[in-house]
Image (cartoon, rainbow, N blue to C red; front, side, top):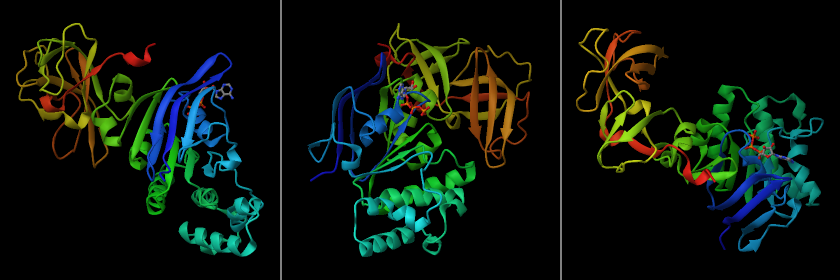
Length: 368
Ligand code: ATP
């Protein structure tokens, strides 16, 4: 039978505050699903309800067709890793990993076998007898994951497990956890507010805003086809420009520039919309014109004149801010593509029609 977790119309109130609102979601078996959203949007509360550490005010949770809504955490058979890790510092690595097995009164021999297996899995077999207090941050992280996996849970729940680590170790651990999850094929839900982390690790991203689900999709779907301005802004860098429909295939930007938007979505008059174009989709070239060129000059082929106001060149990539009439654009390119680009350079920024997306300005369904 399928181990799919199903969440049906789950709500949570803390007193008068409605923190998780009408959440419907199914967590596909064997996948890594990230709950992503800004601080306070309800990610942790939703995860804690899945764990059994909070009870939903209303709604239903089920797995294998079995109602879980009121099953206590200790009977759910889920592994958990929290931000704090909650390891026992005085205990050894092996002792920490064996802890849940001891609670279950697993026999000594099976405990030893399982701990050895997990030590191999997290590549720390030589550290079995070391007290946890003497481990590095990354090693502690691995021990916490091994402990969560000890009793072969059906579901692994991770609440910001990497947030205490420095940037480099954090990135390494993202890859390590993802590889481990794929190798074991264990269904995993991870809470994070870091969109890069979610993009790196997830099969499915659940973007949350103010207790509601704003969008569910693969990392590429939410990046390429965000449902609204909130998602577009939260996932990656984006140019989100106020736009007014001008016929079915064109919009007018704040500086009066008419932009062909291709056939992806028709704009109809009166809609409150934004034009989204990702920085890597804008084509940049240095203009032959003088720096004092007229930024209001009429444009052709979605090619907008502008002037560079800021450059972040990190060697492998270059990010430039371009002042155009009425708005600024962020452009991501490679230093080799635009040699000689400098602050003050007059440029032409082309917005290819196929890369222009129209999105709703106000997240309509979240407005209620
Ligand atoms: P963060 O990334 O900051 O952890 P989050 O998205 O995980 O945020 P939650 O921790 O789920 O958000 O909190 C959602 C809202 O519910 C917040 O406004 C928080 O203050 C409130 N909240 C959470 N737990 C409780 C509680 N036990 N009692 C009252 N309010 C709570």
